[in-house]
Length: 316
Image (cartoon, rainbow, N blue to C red):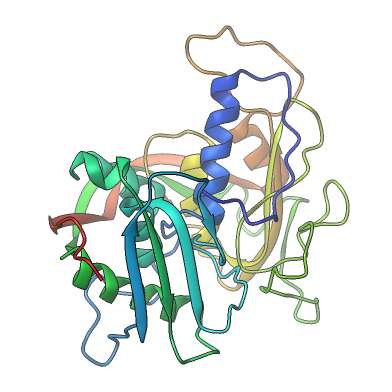
């Protein structure tokens, strides 16, 4: 999945498996689709909400690297394209994730149930709307309509009681030094077209707003992520991937409004590798010390996307 020139990661002295996991996480956050916050989009848009591209082409792609002219991630980071969406060499699962703003746990659950070709086959979608000021969420709704028409895709949401982590304040009313309420007068752009880096120096808050980005890490063996002007629900939903937690994270901080933050930590190596003490903070240690937040294990409700039907695409 494409990484739209907004992440600069410093990763060394970690296993190749750990690097691959980070790349997957960053692609997931920036390009892949999942919803780190379900926003206002519903599984099946009403008639009033249904939007369609004016022209669209879908064809199978058997070569080349995945490329997209807009970020296919769940946040608001967006490169206006004058009504064009050109995404080459992605699996159908990626387009589903984009259309439904799926979270990582939703993607993992759905991946276990879809036909193999939904993950293995690659497709190129080129589509256009006459609305040159189309928003990212409007493109998502148009993509839903396109997938329903060409792939006969039908899905629905299902609520389940599962093991989750609740994100809460470590100390009520106190946040850590690496998170702040987004200043009302702070410059904030979601357009990444003129950005080459999301921050000016290590440890700074990102200058691009609305999405979670990979950032320059503070040391060679660490990962660093951050965002500007995002809700706590978006931060909570992303933690499952960053910490390799294996379960959804839900926001129970009670904190409204939007926030800027940076989280810098040393990832755990794969289970087959011996752990080495690099002196860097663990994921949960960094979460508490840097952001003033912690995770509590409990049972809770989570929405999962369920596949009802899908077919190979119809020809243009």
